[in-house]
Length: 420
Image (cartoon, rainbow, N blue to C red; front, side):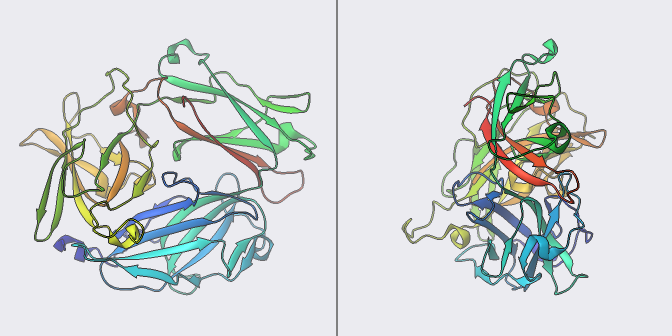
């Protein structure tokens, strides 16, 4: 096992609960939250009174902790609502996560925790935004370990999306713009121009969401969102990725793999910025990731990737041409909830004149991009460039707060691809 991992165990990086996707201690890895329908989608949304969500994470080390969980109902802006818990939850808070397993034959030891929602002890009564919080402790003073957003949708209306050329001519080659239209079917909405709101998210990245969209007009029973130069995103480029399902040989974007007595080092191929590069198609999974161990000698029927996979130290390198040694550059993607975390920050190597970063990743397939922090915000375009041709995955969240209501219903979630 890597010696430096031992010093991480139990250290809290930040104790205050934040209403977003966040990991609060350093030795928590591979957080996944998804439905059963897709291996690659890590955008957790479920239909009210239908389906299951599956949440899991690893904790590096061999010590078992009795973690507990609770669910908090939020408004469309991810602030906690003031409605009573019994109105939106059937169940008791701070239930213990009872499903856990220890890793099998891995260089890096870890404990894998998993949770299914809803379950026999916990379910929800209304639609909307929810925050799942994992705690260490039994009461309101317990320390948060992980927080993750998820959505419970009614799917009570139909949402149609029309991609269009950006109205702003300067964005024609670099951005993607869209109009939205809602067919409310048999649902009565008294004042849709005031009571309906939409949020649009690109590739599950909440940091770049467009929110607070109000309908522009209603016609023939259809609620329309038709703006000029407002519901528009940079197209970005197709994601960089690396495949470490096998640690016995290097895949396409892996330079070399070093297997030694204390674990595995994976050196990725040297990368360069793509801001001024041409658009190139390449397969990706729109910023997501999935866990898989294809080195296992166990047949796929009996293999358990959750505990049969090992962790490797993945080394990123980025050419410094056109960059400042003092630039703040991060590796981001669905694997870390699109957060600017210290573990994934690149440092400038003065000897080799490149930027480098090292982080632990479990065996699997990962999409990622490089992001530069400018004016305190994540800027992906500065390092990756942007093209209207890129295929991105978008989610449209449609909220309804009826006059006099105390919370936002989530009428529908629509997922679509810009250039399938």
